Length: 124
Image (cartoon, rainbow, N blue to C red; front, side, top):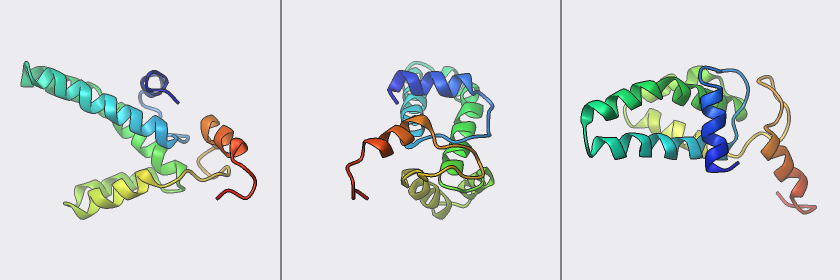
């Protein structure tokens, strides 16, 4: 998934907490989120806060979908409220490879399925 595809997908699924999000979708959107806040913050903190507030729901939604992709409930986002340890756990989980099979949260994201098919035989 490209940077533009990720942003379009996450904004199209603005408040969709069901389904799954691949690593690339999640991390490209996180990059967009950081840039969308950092650049305006150089000019005005108010503008950065407004943008952060506007992107809060899609950020939570893509984070929940990313957790679904590794067979975790979106409620695990509440671990982020635990100082340091919670953030480390969520970071490790967001880096984890996608579940290559359909799970209770939905089918494998298209790009993950394509990547699995492109892997050479015997590859882990």
